[in-house]
Image (cartoon, rainbow, N blue to C red):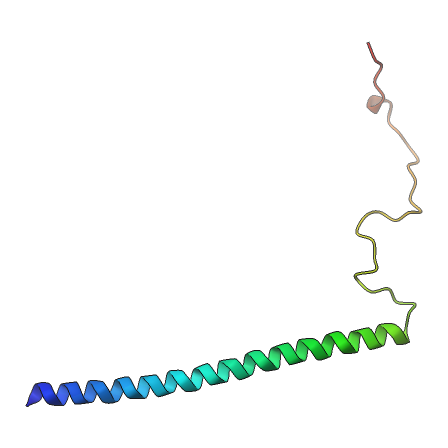
Length: 84
């Protein structure tokens, strides 16, 4: 009789864990959906602000290399080698 009681309690705990996992899964899915909606809205609003204020360059518009106005002012003599 004791083994049937232990088995019954284990089944009840398993059912409770199963339902709790389902609730957590649904909450995680809702949180994930909210995250992607927020990212979409942020990107949309950022593009609207960029259209309103074109003087501020976007991160994508900036060149990753050095600016085009920079020039080399000094070349060390050690970098110039004579050919043999």
